[in-house]
Image 1 (spheres, one colour):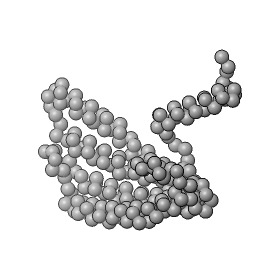
Image 2 (cartoon, one colour):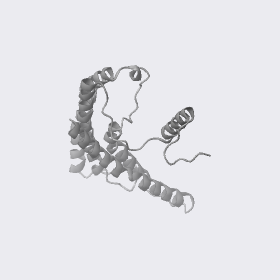
Image 3 (cartoon, helix red, strand yellow):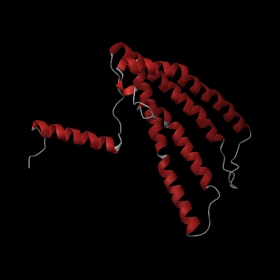
Image 4 (tube, helix red, strand yellow):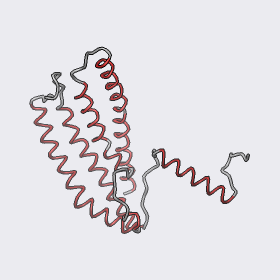
Length: 204
């Protein structure tokens, strides 16, 4: 199970980080649109559609990566008070009865929409540019498959936690700035309380 968890985490991370570069493309695209619209008075007919497609693709393809890092929204004001084994049993139940049915519906429905869209080379009706969107519909299937693979890894985590009484945490990746600041302040207070310093730190 540990081997599969590592495989799924790495797979989700690779896709999440690869599609994360769409943020830069979106930034350049929207900046260009603002420039030509307000300075040259020549708005583009494709900017809105392209921004929707890139944002939607980023959102969908990053879902499995976010799941692997425990980054999805969770109402944990009660959950966090439970023992790890209780948390694991609750998570296991929710994955089996809610997560996987939803993900399977996404995969099969996405396949239906994508195949129909590819059959007539669907384009967007939101702008006169007629931006192709059939390839975007395929993202539904790809995102669903990634979530399915990652969901199995989360099931494995639950089983291991039920067995061992502790969570198998994902490999440390990135963290939000405020989390890093809180950790740094906590470490600094602990050092001040004990009168110790980290290696390489000079006393003033």
